[in-house]
Image 1 (cartoon, one colour):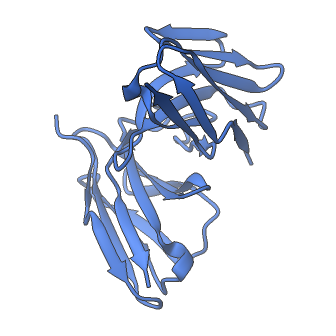
Image 2 (image 1 turned 90 degrees about the horizontal axis):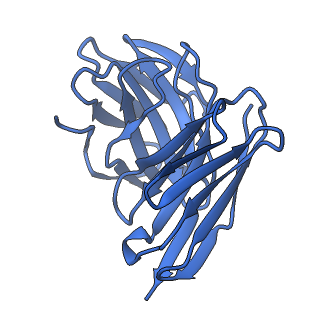
Image 3 (image 1 turned 180 degrees about the vertical axis):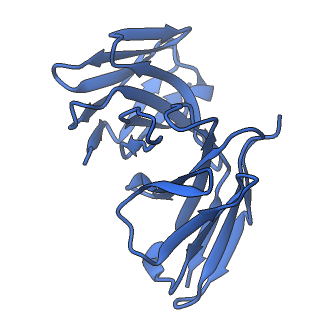
Length: 114
Length: 113
């Protein structure tokens, strides 16, 4: 089955700096890669996602890049703010009409310091 | 539009007992998935239901089971609870199979003593 590895497990940056979180996946058939943000005590929320037919996607201060050959994808957050502090999870899935099973990474605790 | 609703929010049980968790998806959503979240393990897929049928299953023992009703509400049952079952159980809904966008509930925090 699919295996997703995520690094680093913790990341501390100064406000205004950029943050990068990296994930690798094992199944070359995976074609969908979402990122979820989970604030303390709250539900995971989808912040950005990318399909395998696209190499990069950007939404304001966040962007995701995908390298299918190397089987890795990354989340980039620019101009970090204290409210970006949370746990971020990457995930991979094979999208078919057969279901929505996501395989998640183990999460990155991002702390944005003033 | 109301979000995904999970009940109860917290549960405390003892080893050997069984527990039933409930999930109401977003109105109109027909796919419901369950995930177990533990510190250091991230989110692990339990199973997914669509139109009252289990469509996918993760690598959990048979003590973990679920079902979905005709109104798309879903329940998850864990029998013969073990200490290691202590976790946050998250339910997520999506509008259809193969629709990638999952919307999560706030979860049920289960503590097994």
